[in-house]
Image 1: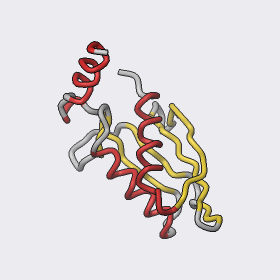
Image 2 (image 1 turned 90 degrees about the vertical axis):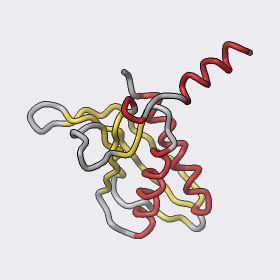
Image 3 (image 1 turned 120 degrees about the vertical axis):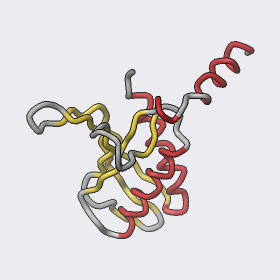
Image 4 (image 1 turned 60 degrees about the vertical axis):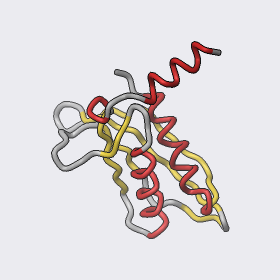
Length: 123
């Protein structure tokens, strides 16, 4: 139990400079997709190993919302890829995440997506 607490404390104290910058992109500009994009950016702010990209950051990882977020009543379907830029204008997909989320729980849904992305990122 004590070891688990020490590991948790060590992860929580990662300086912002060591967290990997991630930009959030989308291939659509509808309101619900924009809300998910904003929620993902906010969730990156509290992530342990990732952070929102800023103006001076080199091109790094991207969370890409594919297509429009599809509303279905009080829920919506989403598809998000975690990509890393490659050579010759190609990208390497590190993870692909999809699911269904309730609109009123969009922040929780975004936090889950960021958590999955963090597990896929290797040092």
